[in-house]
Amino acid sequence: MRRVALRRYNSLSLLEFIELNLERYKFWYEFRLPVKWGNCKKRGRNMLKNSDTKIAYWCVVSGSEIWTINGELPLGSAGEYSLPLEKAVVVDSCDGYPVMWVNDADLDGEREMTSLRELLHLKPELFLAISKALQYGHMSQTLRFCPQCGGRNYLNHNQLAMQCSECRTLHYPRIFPCIIVAVRNQDKILLAQHPRHRNGMYTVIAGFLEVGETLEQCVAREVLEETGIHVKNIHYFGSQPWAFPSSMMMGFVAEYDSGTIKPDYSELSDAQWFLASALPPVAPEGTIARALIEHTLSEIEKDSLPHC
Image (cartoon, rainbow, N blue to C red):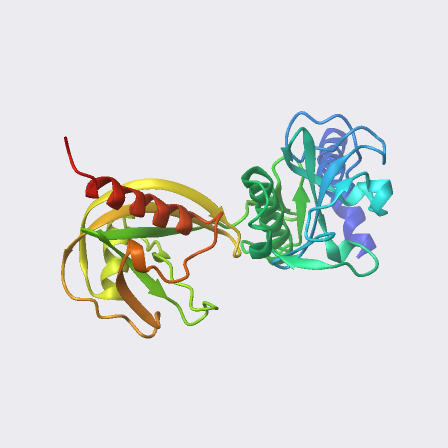
């Protein structure tokens, strides 16, 4: 092996040899060496000042869970929590503090981990920042090898993406587009229950976008497939990143057009029209599902008022 390497280098000109080694040095410097804390203007590009006393939010990620202290995201210095600065990456900011991502697998000891769903009570800005950290953690665990050539991937801190050590291809976090829709039929709203839902909770219809499909087509198809009804007047409502593990929920409202409810029991355990005065337990606050339900009920109430 050594003789082959020597012959290969001997066949290069001095200029080619220098260029080859400069390129290798650049790669190791940018992507393989541990990240140091320095002044940072862009997300993830390095961290804060070279100090373990700087205050930050700390997202220690393990799978789909986050380290919490008494149900809250830790806010303090790396030194206070004995966290290694060289392992941390800035993913966002909240209330003027950076939000740091660290993989639990890179740390020693055990921590109290909490499901992301249990953190919906946090302010939206912080919840979204935690969602980012979870998705970057998921990326670092599921994209360890390049799907192009099989080479080992490493975190590119400039791009917040995984980069192949062989072919240099960048691999960004996967995002799965989903629709979620509230369907209204005059003074009623369509709600469905999934087998996985606890405490009898009902929610609106949701599903994944298929290849070659518009968002509006996806809305119509998912409602028809899961409940057997046709919808019309489909309008965009809003969106929410949903890190379970990497979905983007795009919300819509629609009106009933035709058909009778026939739930797809391979997907749902029940689907019904509900009056605002007789709602079952619904999706928790902080979710786009809850926002869609409240918006639809508000529109129903508004239309029920006498017009002057």
